[in-house]
Image (cartoon, rainbow, N blue to C red; front, side, top):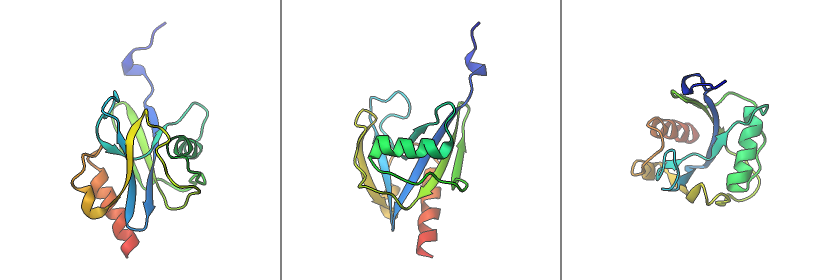
Length: 141
């Protein structure tokens, strides 16, 4: 029995908006990536079967950035729903370790950006810039 693409379950994606004061950490997706190549994106990835979103986010950040976080327990700060996926984004302001590019096959760079530098970037999703501005403005308030 085969299942058509139309009946495939939507991918569950979790990502982190890592904020350090007035800076946000983004990962540059390799130009060789099949999905969303050559854009700046949030670190994160797929929720595995049987895994909670918070546990998946902690695992993904360990794998991609070599940092440890407490699994988020509150609601995400933003959600993106697309035809094939649902993405939840959590604001993360505390972690253990220093972020490094621990997944060079996925990202060819990671970098911290202030709000004035974000507009010049090719971002993975149209809603990111507004979300980044809102989160950074709340920090200034």
